[in-house]
Length: 156
Image (cartoon, rainbow, N blue to C red; front, side):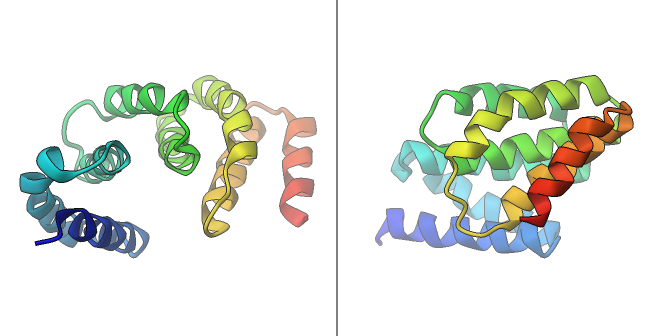
């Protein structure tokens, strides 16, 4: 069996499950990947697996999701995996906003901004999500100048 190819295809399937909010199938697929991930996966695949597992855990409220996402974000921040770092940041910003931790969300938005500029998004959903969450982080703190700048960027 070509395990690296299987893991690439399986990772793509995870992204589809996440995008379609089908977390039960995501969990089933993560279980299938688990037996191969640590033996056959490259570093990017292992990190992607951790991101997908964190998203699954967030949905089902398993463990300390904030600590898990923060640790994952820090592990990714200095890597060249810009899209994965951006995805993790988006989920963490989303969690902060849900918990009304607006100052943490703004700090993460500001820290992630330079990663976003380096990211070549394979689709614009990741960029739009970042801008959307950034807008709400700033707007929630009545930082209207920053909010307006994000709206202008979205219009481009």
